[in-house]
Image 1 (tube, one colour):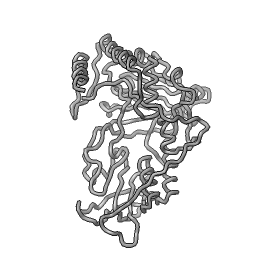
Image 2: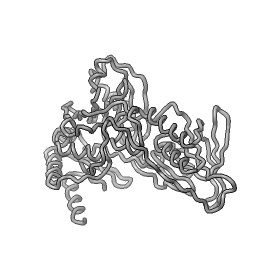
Image 3: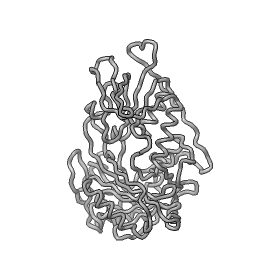
Image 4: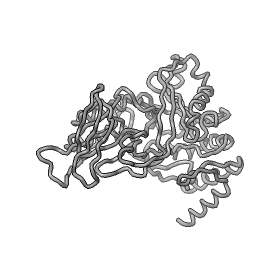
Length: 412
């Protein structure tokens, strides 16, 4: 059973000041083969040119592997709110000029439109939430992979011939380039082709639960866009999503207005109308310039490596939706926003975990108070919330949760 925790904590990591450029990372890969290769390098195909695929292609090519990076549509990108952890700038050596916005103000808006300022008092002077466009990031990472020796193939993979498990025969990738059929033999494959991965289906990697994200890019009048100069907003409520949240995130010259859901995927457009209604005065006079939707994995696939094929990124299902709103009613969401999101300790621990993606040492007494306040919120609002246990889905009441938590603590 997955127990609700209001935050994840993180150890302070080296922070990045806005004027600093990230230092390049060095990754060494050594390629070996059980059978000698006659006069050639090990040959790898990476299918999918998003961040996971491009990073894998860069590392393989830099390690001396002959690498082919397949991307069917380099001009498009997966829909994404655009917020990334601060530590990612350093870890991925992302140039600061790719960052569209340095968000230092967050607002959490409850179902009744009560607002909590999240971060203005708790973000440190050098901290911010980087906002960028996925199409810009993806293009940069693909170009960097090419500069390290990867060969970019703009084409659609249609099928893969998979040899016997113990065979040393190559994998044959059938693909089309400008409607012309081509084939390429490789020694290994990295599948980075998203939640609807063709590679995962071919190797029978199994299924997983997916959510769906939907967003619209909206070009606002200058005076309204100025309000989002360094501001991002998150909305909760049944009208915008029964199990996640909706957002308004600033991009370079527009905002991304979107939502996500796992339990009401067929109603995603209804949820999108809900967030548009909530922010209608703020986006009044805006023009939709792009509409995007994409599945997002909630859990890992049962099998992520098979033979000489490995899955990464969304294809593997490594994304964990930590931001899930577990409260099962708008009453509970009101408590979440007003009582928990307004707590400065919650805010500090949230930013420490999100910005640096490391466990942080919080204060034990503050942790105890936070747990008590959380259960107090449950009791006052008579809240139940969603939980997942394997493939089963249900609701648990507060008394059952408290009993389970007590057993967990006792066993540890």
